[in-house]
Length: 211
Image (cartoon, rainbow, N blue to C red):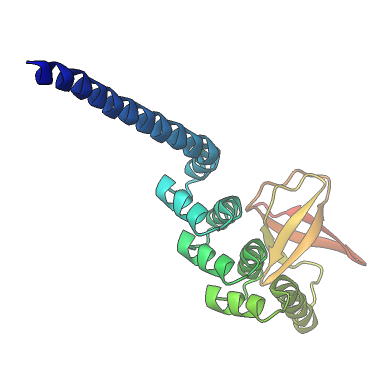
């Protein structure tokens, strides 16, 4: 009987210790989870709203791999908004290789805008080779535009298409050439046909073509 009386308090103390340990573990897990959630929630929401889905597990994985999650997420958002198909893994791999992810993404966007064939593999290879990929694409684009101008200078009467809404000034496309233009006193909607009515040095004046 005496032995039983001694065992019961010991068992109670052991149970209390186990319960206390479980409570402490639960609190620690809860705190860690919330810290992770708060740290990545804004990035996750920003990506979600931009349709550049990046899930929480990917964000946690970036943290464990010592990848700058903000750089990757913002670069992916930029790429998606520009119509580029780049995965989170593509961006992470280049980051871990020591590349400049935002600059390569901007170079890809510029290449697309200037109709230059540039794959992700080519862009990252240029960047990792120590060259400025963005400057190279800009130079190539300028050279291509210069060649187009030499081959076919714009003339009075050329018909093109407004690339933006033209109030006082905007952009228009004539064949493969994109130039800044000024409207001749009339509001011109984006996508409307326009005709060059005057060229004064670098100033190109256009008017809408009414069918």
